[in-house]
Image: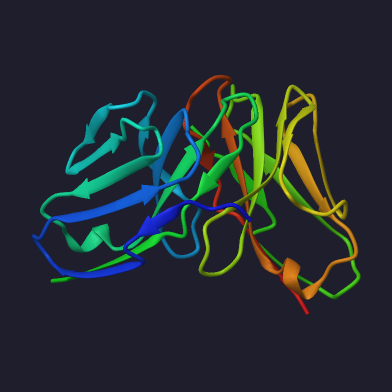
Length: 112
Length: 112
């Protein structure tokens, strides 16, 4: 199936470090979403971006909607152990179809 | 407030059998989408329903079908199960418009 290119695939960092991950696509999206998924749970929405160039923060998380509308990044500052999990980007072409295209995920591990 | 609820949480079926998965959206959400998440990958879009009508369909065979009821709950049916149908099936609901989707915890389907 169609997927976004998300990188890195995995990260193993020290507590307190900053983290950056990104998603790229050959298609233009009207909405970019970032989700976090814990084992055995569904994805939880972290940040939603609706306009090209938009920069949005949610606590220690910051995400940007790329100007070309084909990419987005997520930064996590001062990581803590509970940041461990799998982070997914998702792009949406149209709000009418409800179809989200997901990246392959970035697995984040934080060493205390 | 109750989030998106899915039932059952776990299910084991035999090849060739049929399965029905259920989803109750967040109160006030009229849009329901279904996703399949195979281990190690991002979710793949199956269907979206809004006001009981199909709004979008992903690249899945006709063995997959869904419907939405007047109370906006939804069912996903899969016929003639294959081993490759083993996955986490996620339901997401949203308000109409460009809003992020809230996911349930999913149904873990194992086909043996």
